[in-house]
Amino acid sequence: MSTTKTKAGKTTSNAKKPKRSSSSKRSSTRASRTAPAKSTTTEASATRCTSCGSTNRSEYFRTQELPTGSSPSHVRLQWTKCTDCDQHRIDRTFFDRD
Ligand SMILES: [Zn+2]
Image (cartoon, rainbow, N blue to C red; front, top):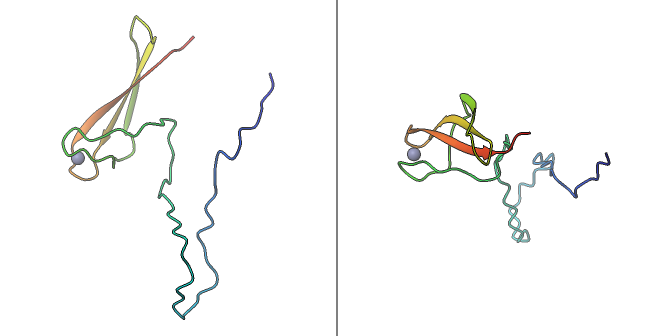
């Protein structure tokens, strides 16, 4: 089994700036928007709140995997909560397990 490195999976954000310039420079034109993705889950797609449509959610507080009896073979249920309106929901992720 050969593990080939994928290029630059994670970018560790060095957000710490030791230098602090008191003078307000206008030269910084680059808009570096760092996403506050602190804990990236394995899911790539962001799920939305069924109530307000927000993608902000709490950590999954319960996870259950069930066989579906068809293809894909399993479904993962993950309970979470919208952090904007407190609407609970269950994210479903279908996957194959062999
Ligand atoms: Zn919501």
